[in-house]
Length: 396
Image (cartoon, rainbow, N blue to C red; front, side, top):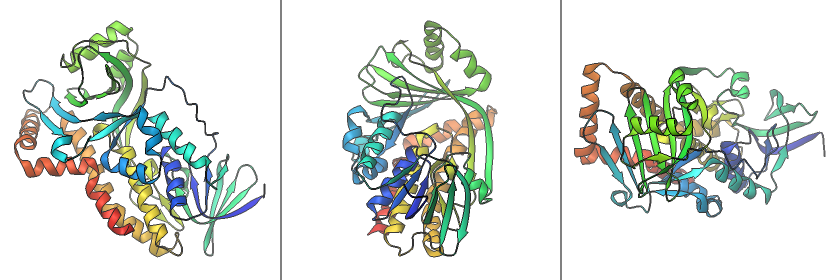
């Protein structure tokens, strides 16, 4: 193994977005090194209940990367989505049929997606480096990364896919807008008494949003967001008491809940980078924007970051040039701003209990239900299809 390697692109971070970025750049014809301190594993814990709602655009991107077929067996189709508010009559329903799709998306275990990406990378020339970046500097027409194992990497482009607390973003002094929601998301699975028929529910309660998504024939994923103390309290309950509390929050649309899986918890913050590029560097995924899980847009947005970066790289002689980075930032601007704004406003609106806002929420849901153009616009945004169409035009 040499102490210094030269590649077109270095991807820092080997999670879902990092693995997607590396594979996308390889498919764009670039030589790639992937830097990740933890050894990637194909045997992630089976008890890990985390799932991601992959939307229609993401499925198309994963198909183009050649990994969807290996993931699909563990993916549960979402054929409709219902949005409702606790204490209010009525709801809004989006269906795959009205979108002209087989499914609006697929609720998919995180471990299945990651394994599918890693299997695909194993059959490539991607240079894997189990290390941490300790220094990043710009030298003439390339960037040089010094690693804690004594090696260095030289690349024309560095992709920072190193998460919410991105060390590379901080090293480049890219400012962020940050907001602590004061909430923790609890993720688990439960058995349901009645069939879910492929329907995903987003229910807004006084304490925060509660999502129940199809996971198996008689099982659902639960993403329950509440203030920190309330989440800790329900997480500590016995199984029967937990299911009873969940029932009170959700209602009996799916009958009784039982047999909960492991309860995993994450505090929620919004972190939005004001810029997504610096000299020879771009941000993707949570390093660029970490969003509230409501509407399940985070990884879908990050996957479009990766696909956009690859499309730009495929058409650029130098993927880290000022022009290529300017193009990437321009192509990502509207999509990331619209999704980040939509998720943030949704959380803030439904978290506020002022009577006037409560009435506006009800009118808003009613408008979604009865105004076809507004209804279609929201659905198309959540499917990621508008952004994907712009990306495909760039790649053409």
